[in-house]
Length: 204
Length: 204
DNA sequence: TTGCAATTTAATAAGTCTATTAAATATACA
DNA sequence: TGTATATTTAATAGACTTATTAAATTGCAA
Image (cartoon, rainbow over all chains, first blue to last red; front, side, top):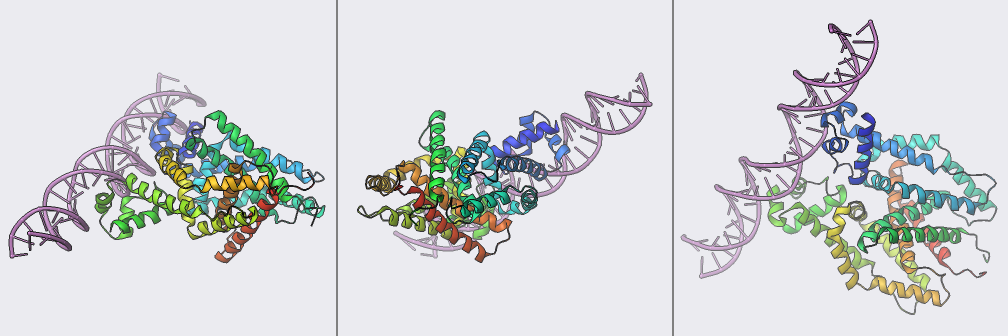
């Protein structure tokens, strides 16, 4: 029961956001009494934290794509782009949740900060990504660029591909198939733009 | 009074989103009775629509950067990137409002769709942008790319530069100056990535 | 079976929310 | 000045919110 409340809360928070989801809604979704939600999680805020942290760590865990040291940078980039596209495609509402409650709700950031820091410290993915980028620069594979900015470039293009698919899909009246095709195009365009935009120019 | 209610609502909706802003909050912000908000705008939803449309049209109006036909594509790109960075820098909460209520709230999209379509039909900016992109392709200035994707590339990088500045600023404890420096770096990185990532390769 | 603990329920307190109403005040115009 | 109109207010209905309480129910072990 505790698990199914968590699962229902997870769905509803992601779909509608924190404010638009009541503990009554969650109970209705589960098919139980509203007081049960509070019996297991005491407060709505506490339940949300549990949901958020769970989703956050599940996502962060999957960001950790294999980073073989000796490997060329561009195959690595392809893997990252593909993996990130797939992660979001599997759970697009999670991106909504993060944008809604992390990016837009500055109050909630404070309570999330600790979780974020802890994950960053435990996971060394970003540090190793930076090393791979530095190595690629030294080998003349890519131009000079701050690894953080390189990473933001990637994430920007991936996340916005999905957001634009969602919005354009509605606005232009695209069906599921057309949206899928658009996303596939975005995946290739993202990779192309990054590869070419990061490559070391020969004529320089 | 009607105008000052609209202004206060504009601020609060952008800061906190629709659900987290009550008509009582708006009245308090203005310094008037809560019933006045309903006297002038009847419903909260109606007031929000007015706010949203106003902000939307104000932004769309500014997207219309000069598109001289004969001009090279890259100066045009620089203008677009600079203009978009400046627009968001002036009113970062507006981006939040759009993300919150347009991207994330699928219900509200329906009511916004008409406004969007009307603006797209009236403004020919996007059509002319596409023409400029096609011309640049014919002249061999940029590689082959669907103009829509090119535009999404630009918008993705610009908007996410601001979102990441906001989030990283909080998470890493950056002060206003450091955030400003980060944004300036993002602007250059965005331009560099686009110029190089869109350029027609010589060796092809 | 009995008794104890865990779970689930109904009822409700205390507060907020949107929206409406009628009364009070301000404004404009004859 | 008097009167019609516009604006503003206080009061409140009615619905919904989170959270708590005590009572009812279930499951299990002695």
